[in-house]
Length: 65
Image 1 (cartoon, one colour):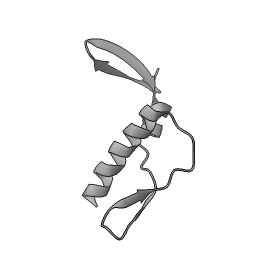
Image 2 (tube, one colour):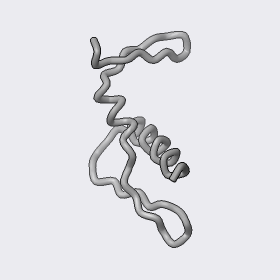
Image 3 (cartoon, rainbow, N blue to C red):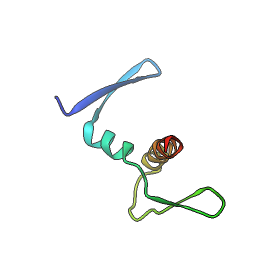
């Protein structure tokens, strides 16, 4: 399936839909605060694991800017 990819972890392989990958990698919206940090605005419900992945990706992107 061209819309899926495989991930290997712990010696096991899983196939995940590309829509999940896109959701995980989407940068969260946030605003800089007065302490040189970022306040994240969450306007949609998401699973904890998805939020954690998106937050990591967002933090990485923000550090590059």
